[in-house]
Length: 406
Figure 1 (cartoon, rainbow, N blue to C red):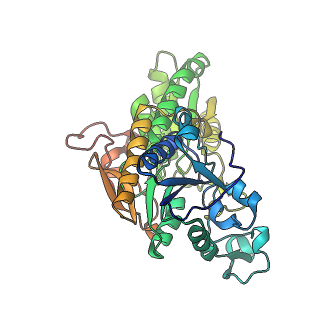
Figure 2 (tube, helix red, strand yellow):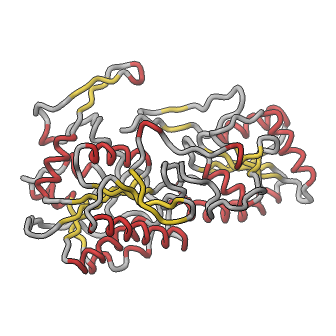
Figure 3 (cartoon, rainbow, N blue to C red):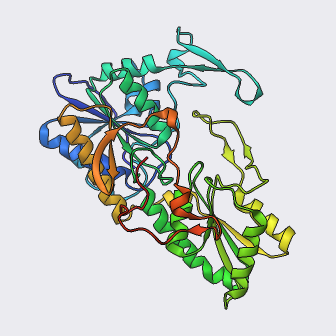
């Protein structure tokens, strides 16, 4: 990772772009950062990296040199030259929601700030809206345009800033692939590539022990990652959009196991998948956007299979491994293109837009309305509800990633 800068001076005579990454990391983020930085260097535009996502703009104290050194990273061709060769994000990330801060940075304690009480979890929790601080820091930094890279949570706040008049362009990233208005989000292809490779490797172990292999992947609200992994590996899947019948699912797995010469079967589950009569368990304190950690649905299914069929299983959690390491070709290509599209939009003075793929073509679309929630799979056209597998037929005329933007 790049070391943060040790000093900071604001040159208001130069045009300045801010760029940040929020939420979970995915491969491809550094390619976006590099593409914007290189383009900026060609036009004499300064690019400022804002470290740790929205936290940079809520916690930054412009009167404190240590705070500026921690949260601000001037970007140039030299310090971004090789960053696209690795995964993660050199700007680091956080799950900060400036509208609902549960703890104030030290320099804001005691100040008169908008506050509200939340009763989530059975008790009253005080939260502060630090949007005023965000706007003040953007102004103090002389940032004329902001690029926000993130999933539906990060981009929900980008939509709010756009409504307040901040010039902002969004870039969608999440291996869940569930951001609205686009068919593709950075990180998705690498996640499927990694999940498919992991499952193919583990076939030898699952087959050697003649068991049922259960794989869990990310997908809190949508089943894109599980369904496309199942599509590529020809196995069954369970997705959040459809509650399967547990007895039917176990029957199908047993039939497949017995028909397999190596006497094993495989299935992949979204982390948010459920079946009839089962409610996914959550635990821990909600994050800044109200999400709690989910108990492993793979472990729950394994226990049900053992109790109902007496079959031994092998469970494997593929979640975090799928977002680690360098991007594959598709994520590198899309990330570079999305970054250049965002930069072109800034040169044209545009705002409130997001780089996207629509009908298989690159496009600029409105930043999604946060009130609509995540994009979902179209079960009727993608999921075989009798066989609990992807639908492989009737793809003529669909874009390359099979599901249209919604």
